Length: 398
Image 1 (cartoon, rainbow, N blue to C red):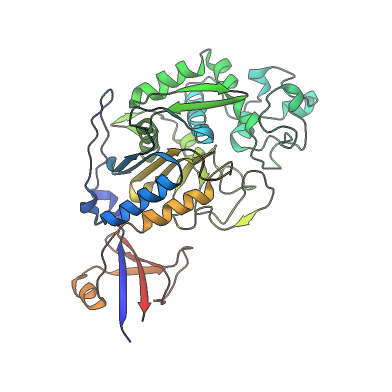
Image 2 (cartoon, rainbow, N blue to C red; image 1 turned 120 degrees about the vertical axis):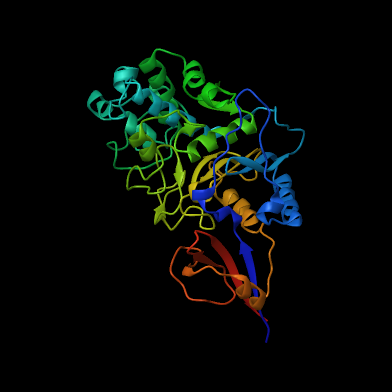
């Protein structure tokens, strides 16, 4: 019986203490790169990833490591200058702008929404309506009935179902009304405010455009990647602190309420014990992206608009494109792409070769759910070492 270890050397899991993040210059097409060879990634596996993306109607894909481009690919006539819609991934831009408006004293997330939209913006009675706050809009807990109309922002569409804060439901309409909240609070149109406080400081392009009732952000793929890089670096861009309100930033990217642990302020969060998904009141056990790192935060939009940010790996990747499936939020598609990314490392060593060269101290072995494990056979395990690296191994018994 031969024993073989297939070692996936996760260069993604590098030691952040020695990795200085690169920021591409503003107003420039220059962007430093890292060769996939330096990360021990196999070209044939990259080709498999690209083939999967192409088959699933992708327009653009970018992966950053330490801020530098490792992978960048465009499909079906798309290019680095092509604009594309973010769908619900753009909710995260709005969340960031609410934080900027709070930082500047224009509003507080605990303010009642009626302070900025006036009385009668819903079809609730005034007592019910006055209970709804900006925080409820950010966390999908307004209590408004998402079954009446998902997108309609007319007052007649916004019916009372429950008091705010006791029911989580993914509902576009209350989110969309954050645009006039920001505009009325700041006295500026949302695109001007976004340009001044976010886009221009980090070299993004883009704008919000109405499509029916919906407020949709559009930009190039590289601008989407820039936003992911800003989030990766805690709201700081090349030494310039874009968002200084650390409390808001942390609240935005952590569990905002206990109804859906996997939801922050319009961001999706991995590594939680349970989750809820759009269009359902069912609570699912476990991570929303079980094959990705626990500290993953995601901006997810219809038809597979994706930003994934992983602080522990200093990693950002984005995808734009047409529909891979019909889901409102592409959780399954996100998981499928992670399968290909996890398979990119190409080292395959015998157990004797591998252990003979390794001088690191093994601290812990965990399974894909983060549970402590022994050296099990024929299943993926993560080996955590004292130098901060993590490897994914499968011991195959033949």
